[in-house]
Length: 489
Image 1 (cartoon, helix red, strand yellow):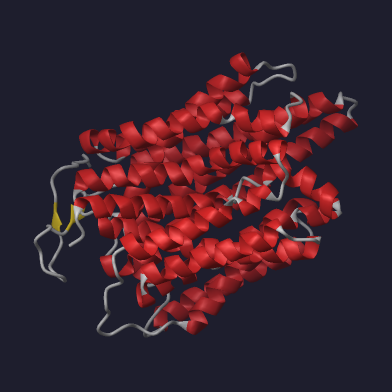
Image 2 (cartoon, rainbow, N blue to C red):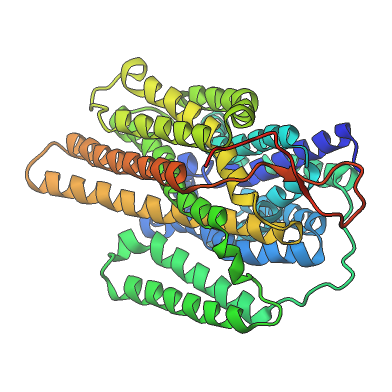
């Protein structure tokens, strides 16, 4: 049995590896203008610096989680770290736009492998309810705070050095994570009768997810009612329907459908989709507001996100686990999401001539507190009912819901912003004023998403007390409930 010190060292390694992945979803945004001018991207092609990563990342999460269950989470984690690190070198040294996009696609593959199994490994390391809640607080900060840290780091690296370093900074981190993972992560358990990989199911769901991501991220450019968007999304839905039919009959399904009959798993996915839509939109639109309305430089945008990162870290690491252990999962989850909704609502009132202290900082602080408090209980609720041998798959499902919710929510809210701005400009409004009012409309919609997540989670989740095997139990012993985290029904 892994001792106390080794468990926490393993947690830090897993969190650092996942932070590297989460950073890459936002660190690029601030550097896009520099990348465009340096490599000669057209405006439409520039989107593929982001889209290529999202496409492979979202498409391979479920498959990666299942591979972790079948062949070992540690093995999949290390393979993902190597792939991501090598791809980061390719991106950082890319002499052309094509090679940069290719490198981003490979980064997405590696990122999917790391993200899909990291949560499962953490759940396996910590069985004690108090330790698990604290560990999930660390991991929750990585997943929720990584976006803010990414904007900060992207602004600093681009402003002080060049865009190449937003990728090259991953190389020493990735190498350190791989070496440390070999030493501190527990060895993969030997499976007496490993199940076969459901190849047909893997192909169906991966292609379906990739088509949906492609349709979503290109929806604003092509038009949501265009033939291309409708065909892509329609094909994705059709393939998902075929996938569900196949899984219901497969002897060794990639995703056992009974997983979604678990109340807390299903409700957590809904909360995750709504929450991610609000979070992705907040980070993206807040950065644009600071740059395009208030005129901040890339470095100033990065520094503006420091308060969010600091408050989020404090609430994730020092407050969230204590709230969970004292009040259960639902009260802190609901409170955190309501704070996030309030943050977005405040930003929906930010004026064209806004000041940082009066119009930006309050929202930054509220978002940091809300995300820091809410993310831990969301993850605990999603993973609490899952059997250990399916934890990798459940981890992939959780990450897929966040990723798909974030991509869809961001695309829809950006479309809403652009539509509002275009209408105002056509009516003769000042371009900057019109742009700001478009942002305001999207922030308000994001606040509604966070509010809906709070209502759904608070009303429908029925989390059990945290569970885990006793330290002295033999492998394969039945898990027992710990009555340390009661949550009233």
